Length: 116
Image 1 (spheres, rainbow, N blue to C red):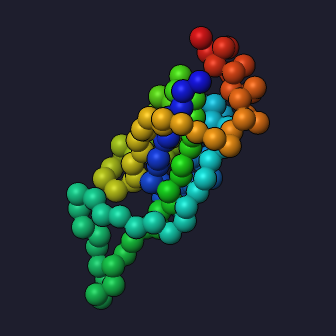
Image 2 (cartoon, one colour):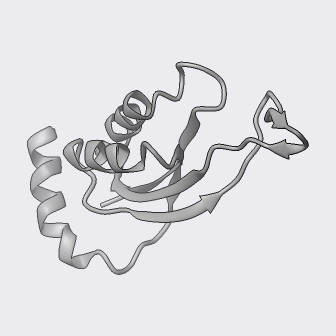
């Protein structure tokens, strides 16, 4: 099997919904890194010299390559990344090797066979 890494920067208020949707779309697990910051096209607004920033979480998902695009599109829909600037971003990259998922391979094999 071949795998992809999906990396999503998600508003912290939407993280749980994104994780649930990714699992429903075929993801078998995720890692969440809290308290990420970023800056996009438009600078954050300030109030009395304080920057008003929405907290972000980084969601990492190792997924089977045949399921990756569907999971990525699902994350986009639930995270509402394309509704307006600054909502979040997600992308996928190829993984050359992976260890530590042998317990998930039997489930993944069945899911991928059903998809194909």
